[in-house]
Length: 110
Image 1 (spheres, rainbow, N blue to C red):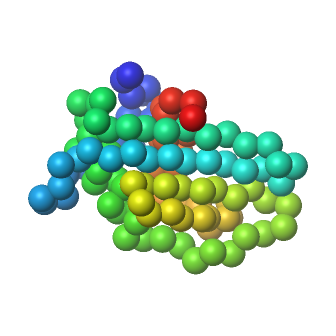
Image 2: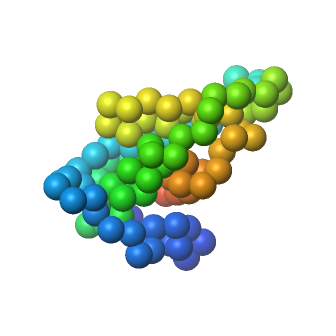
């Protein structure tokens, strides 16, 4: 699968963290207030651009916002290998927002 032009800028120019193989599984889920949800997964073992995913995931995990869910707003679950993160819609920003956006847009249905 190739990146769409719309989302390609999110991963452009990113570098692999030193010492990591770039092989990981990233899962993002958006859960709406009515209980409906969307879940997508990216498995970098089957991708040529694993280094960019690894770098973006590392930056996302290093800049986690506090957990402040707002009643009536969506929440997001983000899993990077064995790290699980929950983020309220209004706190979704920076690298965490970028990672969630690109996984939901480009990932495979899970």
